[in-house]
Image (cartoon, rainbow, N blue to C red; front, side):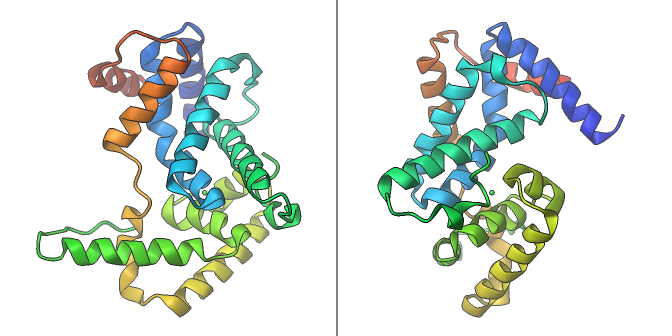
Length: 233
């Protein structure tokens, strides 16, 4: 079985469980996509709190309208398009004069770990902040591609499909984003990219709880049930 076929099978199983109202399926979907959607939203709105709101609204819209999903793309791509459009809508409302041509890379709907010891934890946190600021300063169309390619480690093809742009455009924008960042950051910073823009633990659980509450799902969801569901995939 190919990776694509396996993903489609897992999506179909998860979709069937969600349509039956299984809380563990809702939780599994969110745990699988929280970080990617958060990073994509943040690359557009450039605000952590608003990015979290975008992710929450994305899930509420998607889970309340599961019949709209036709399987033409993966669940992840479907969610990403909803998140991108929600984020862009907020950006337009925040800045009515925004040039939509500058956001065309998403309108159709974005590392290596290292051991951290107590002695260098504070320094590494500051380095991470420097990286995040540098990424935030990239042009919008470069920033989203960079977030998906470098931070989320998506392939060129995956990024192109998610953003609805040609693969060559992804390559060009990623190259230019890298060139701009190299001018501001030293090569040693590359080792902490995987830790940038975290979205896990308590924040992940809190968002999941709010989404389930808005959907009227009151059954408690435990980690073991989610883990069991993931194993089936």
